Amino acid sequence: MKRKIAAIFAADIAGYSRLVAEDEEETLRRLASYREVVDDFIARAGGRIFNTAGDAVLAEFPSAVDAVRCAIDIQESLRTRNMAYPPSRQMSFRIGITIGDVVERNGDLLGDGVNIAARLEGLAEVGGICVSRAVHEQVANKLSVQFADIGAQEVKNIPTPVHAYMVAMRREDGTYSKPQLKKPGSKLAAAPVWMWPLVVAVVSIVAIGVTGFLYNTKLKQAANVAATPAAAPSAAPTANAVAPSPMPTQLAKAP
Image (cartoon, rainbow, N blue to C red; front, side, top):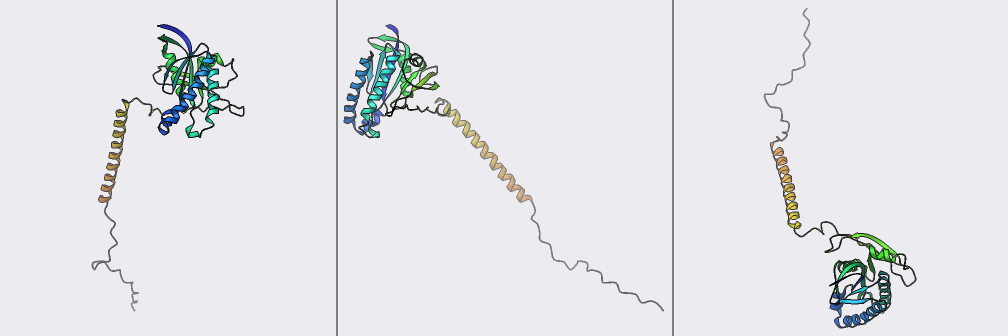
């Protein structure tokens, strides 16, 4: 096995499964046509495709500058081709690029560099490009390209966060699009699977406790109401009631 440093380019088609499900034959024909464009740009930029799987393409470049320039050319060319189709049938690639130490075996490349490029591709916008900080440092002052720093990103099966940048793609009017930062998922949604039973148990215990407290409170309120005597209406005067004293009469004076 041979070890080397290379710029790794990873690309695949956004929503490819949906496109195939809607019209398999037309999608496969267009994939072959688009792959010719992709393969041609990679070869002209001095790259080498070392692996493909379905709609995915993995390539290596001796230079990060060549890899990013090639990616931009591919995206701009395919964007023009997509204009002939409605938005729901457009076939757009997402591309990720990094620089890494990889192992070459029988022409294939293996290692974290390949894995990180694939994860960066997953962070890219549809029709966009996402690169690592190492690539950004190599390219920033050599190509007239604008970048958006999206910070450290936690990606699947990579132990440390990957600092990533989005490439601002040029529009038809010559302006550049502003990449939209992806909102991180909630921590609850990202919790490991083994934590879910614990979360459910805690929520259940809290719910039971609250229900019991409310039930006991209602019972106490009902008991207090039952123990309080009802206010009796004022009784009518009885026969034994003392009659009021008559007005005193004036005594006659003795002669």
